[in-house]
Length: 313
Image (cartoon, rainbow, N blue to C red; front, top):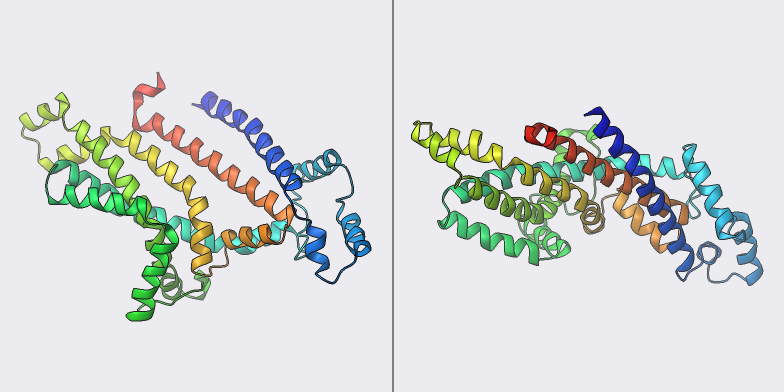
């Protein structure tokens, strides 16, 4: 197992390097000058050129990349062009809302989707199975921002149950923290419930046709034990895979949801950085998201070794 982990960790190094190079080059090749954004509309060409020189943008692209990647390896992600603060400090200030949103979303999705998909497979063709099929189509079809605005209109404006927008840190109290996150969790969880439940249904329904299920039932084992210990346990690998994919896809969903609900997390920081052409912040965030994506995939691969012992040999 240690050898497997070492190989996977070493394989992530070139992946992250390629991501860093591509993002760096794309930012330099796309139209737009961060110096012009900082200088404002009334600036002269001399003002813009002076700002470019201060930011180091007059140096060659290769020199800029070498300086940036060398600093990153030392733990220095640079300073924000627009906010004039260290990128690391900006990330630390914004990471709690994003982690709260992502962790709550995937937890809610798994707690709802896995039982729902398992029961739908157990009663295939029943009303729950048909409901799941319809819900999955709706979950995949409706954009995240549409779901978000619909939930805001119903639960925040019409029923006045939850706050409309904003975020309160967990240090200000658990209940205010939960109130602010219930609607964003439900908004993001909709698509992941549809995804995970469909895969769970397909995997469990396939497992229920295997010989060991018939053997377990012939031995008189309770149906609940057959579903949980035999069918669901043997269908765990594809379910865990799609959960890992869902966590990785949260990166894109978080950006939209944080914008809809005005949550000051990494998603809104990414949007602001893109609009302001804030190269160091964009590069740092993309690198952070890439590390998270690679780490999630690594954890999923390691989980296979425990879920299916045959993979070890």
